[in-house]
Image (tube, rainbow, N blue to C red; front, side, top):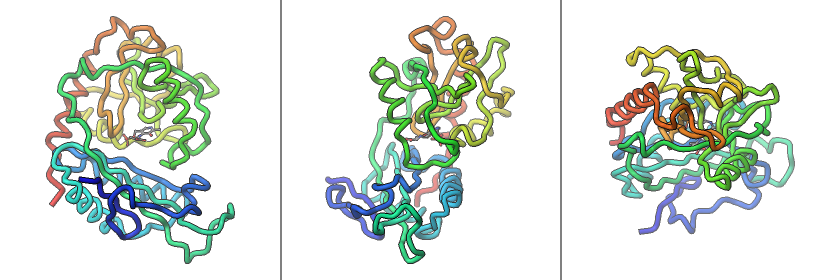
Length: 290
Ligand code: PDD
């Protein structure tokens, strides 16, 4: 069975699902996106993702292509048509639409482009130790509005490729002041030398991760206190524990940074606890696919 995609009102087999060559997403990267994880057919943190989509669109003055309720319906229909009863990813992209190439915004009559795709992925990881990974570090080469989830991902693509070529999974990006922002497609957290859990505060330097937000809500129950303060490359290198968060990687332990083990190279106690808390959050999410 071919995968089915949604494009501007139509459900089509993936090879036939196309956008126009003058789509502004293609020509200018003039668009935004979301990635939502599906666990046993249930969308995880859907409201957070749709709220962030709303914010990204608003910041760039791209109109909603349809109501967020209608989008939620399309997502469910697409999940059903692709028979995603187990685990999957839903990708949503909205661009400013197709118009004769001109940097300035097109006329108000130009309809935004909406694309939604979905695909199956591996089940939620069971074994936190096997889920542990390695990262490298590199400069943050992005613009000043990393809080908007745009499809302009070239620095992220280059950072991720650098990680791959170094045999690592992610690149922790470092700003001009020597402070860590986040990874190419995930937020980064440390337990510092004093035992304090830290992650960079929200602002224009990082994406406000939905997994980050969900984990923040779980911290109180876990009786873990968080300090939302930026940490330096040096602090990352000397951290007791390191982990990353994203919709596709959940809470993922980092046990090597630039080839050097984090502490003893084993998953730390706080990371272990937060992985388990997030696993409960995913498994316990109320059914919202009807
Ligand atoms: N990436 N930071 C960046 C730069 C990201 O691209 C992402 C998400 C995150 C984590 O956000 P969330 O927890 O909402 O997934 C942080 C998605 C998964 C992607 O590009 O595939």
